[in-house]
Image (cartoon, rainbow, N blue to C red; front, side, top):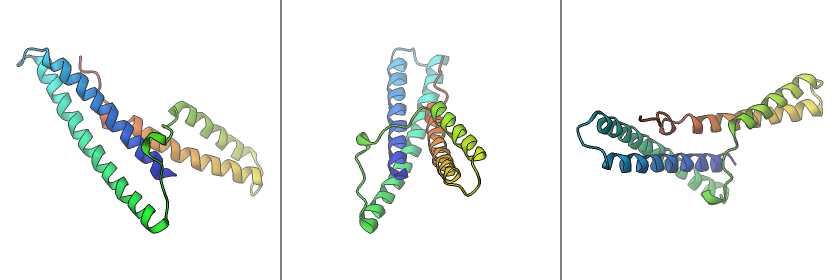
Amino acid sequence: MEVEQDLRTASDRVMRTLERLHELETEKRGIEPGTARFRKIAREVERLSASVFADTHAQEQLAERTVVLREQAGVVLQPIDDIEPSREIQVILAEWRDAERRMSEAKPNSADHARAAADADRLRAEYRRTYQSVSSPSTKGRSTG
């Protein structure tokens, strides 16, 4: 279910950012205040903190969607730890290209064409979610040196 993967992606993003924040704060504690390096790390901490706020806001919106799914549709979702993490983006892209190739080679309106089109649609959505996760502001600008 897409909302489950969105929850996993959002949670993974927050955890990665918090880990990076911990690394930066630990490093900053050992640097003389007032230096260029100290200021640069402080700015990065501020930027990452803002991205955590944005990501947790997105998680809250997803949580509200899960309430609707549970109460109105009776859908019971897995805990985030039980949801498989996103696959490598290169793998998804290769499978998506293959599905597009199969679709172009299949006879229109055939079962093979329909399967390939469904695969392409599913992989396009997975690629979009994974790309958004990978290109999140909380994962950019990690170099502070």
